[in-house]
Image (tube, rainbow over all chains, first blue to last red; front, side, top):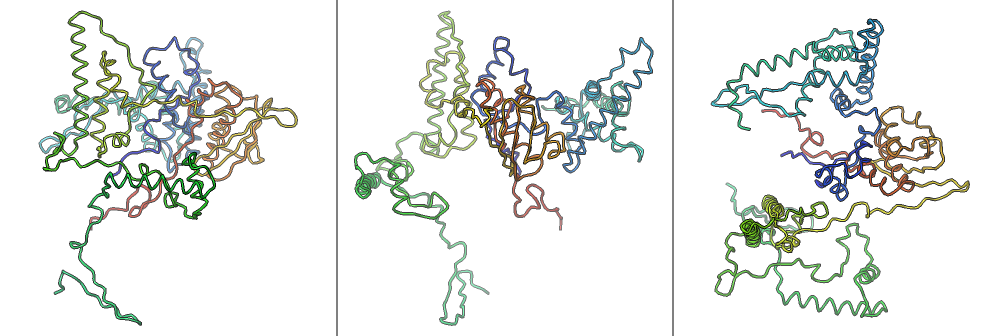
Amino acid sequence: MPVRWSRYNPSYLEPEVKKESHQKPLEELTNEQREQVELKAVRPIKAAPPSLSSSVFSDPMISKFTNMMMKSGNKVLARSLMSQTLEAIKRKQLEKYHKAPENEKETIECNPYVIFHQALKNCQPIIGLSNITKGGKTYQVPVPLTDNRKRFLAMKWLITECRENKHRRTLMPEKLSQELLLAFNNEGPVIKRKHVLHKMAEANRAYAHFRWW
Amino acid sequence: MWSRRSLVKPRINRATLRLICTTTAVQRKNVGASGPEKYTEAFIKKQIEEFNLGKRHLANMMGEDPETFTQEDIDRAIAYLFPSGLFNKRARPLMKHPTEVFPEQRKIQWGEDGRPFHFLFYTGKQSYYSLMHETYEKFLNVQKHQDQLTAQDLPVQKEKRNLAGSRWLTKIELEEMLLEQVSDDDYSRFIQLLQKLVALPCADIEEKYIQKFSKELPVQLQKVVIEPLQHDERGVAFSTGEGKRKTARATAVVYDNGTGKITVNGIDILHYFPVLQDREQLLFPFQFLGRIGKHDMVCTVSGGGRSAQAGAIRLASAKALRSFVTEKEVEFMRQAGLLTVDPRVKERKKPGQEGSRRKFTWKKR
């Protein structure tokens, strides 16, 4: 039977890479954080993975998205596609910025990271469906989702959308930047998919009591 | 039909005609099921006497004082007198005190009339269940004490015991203590009960009992020795570090008063590591400490792939930087995961499967 195991002893803790968390003086922390600090002084800590770095350019969400876009372990290609996408978003936003009249210039967001985070947030579903078999029949039961699951679903929908519904000649960065900008403004096929899921959950509200967890 | 009792196969050899009889599985004796050999107390005592006598003889042979002959001296003498080229250390000749050689065993648990001494003998795990009973008794004691204090309107102490500096006994240590096998579930139940006991406010009463099952954890930083800075001919301070990741091995020399130039195997990092992620990893320790333009680095690396070499150099440079930096910053580096060797290696391929996890295509027929 396959069991999920890791090469580290279970007593090893996760590494904390950000510089600011180490420079905080002791008085500002709450009691729980103080206990955490004391625990960290005694327990061994795992090595930081190669995708994690303390520089300003490394973002955990972007690395997760890059890993999901990666095919057959080709991280070089996935990372270059990601950077081209961010560049494309920046270019499109700058075009819009320079063409817009003076009073609207402040509302246009040019930072591609902010757009990426906001678009992902807009795509996240609040409630999900799960298959529960009762009395021989399988029902779609509305179920609350954890934060990790929401993020995963948003990223998965974006990637599948970009891979399938595009013209043969368009490249991934262009299509992805298009989708991200639409999602940022709460439009586009991914947001529609999220709304469809919400409507299905609302329709199957009667079966909500089948859930036992 | 073939008789299932025994199969006699005559094998025609040039020299002789040998009859080889084989038995079926039913009649084969299972040597392992009879359990480990039992030693009597008299046997162990005799072994200890023989060991002490042998120790004195050995000391005389080596020309040393029999009174002050330690275990290390014994090991050295045996390695000298009986040199062995065997790779497995446990297969080499050994002379140790009998308590280390023969594992501790339980004495017979029943008297002459066949009646067992312990009232929980027939549960099969008498020590474990008696331990659970004892711990729960202490738990009820503490609760009674707490109720007494609240009845008398006295304040209940709420000082939390510092859990960070100690750990519970591991399963193996518990097995050694109880001298019987403890399953994973039983062990986790016992630890949960201990945690519940410690969580009560008046648990200080049973502090002595709890200390039997907890061990001190030393602060991690004290285990590592930080080497002092060395100086080369021009007077520039430098320090070396070694790192490894998967199959890659790297050594790094970090010089002070530098411009931030990094050379790998004689080649500049821009040419050796064309991928941005690897260069980010190389600069990670410097960026974390805020010393990007201040140090020069010369490294050599071999083995592994592109990412493994970058990880190995990162570890080597972090170890070298420890000598330039205060102890607090070394602790921050450790908590950022820069100073741990990454133990992840490629998982082996198993027989009956295509890879380490992937199974062969399942065909119904």
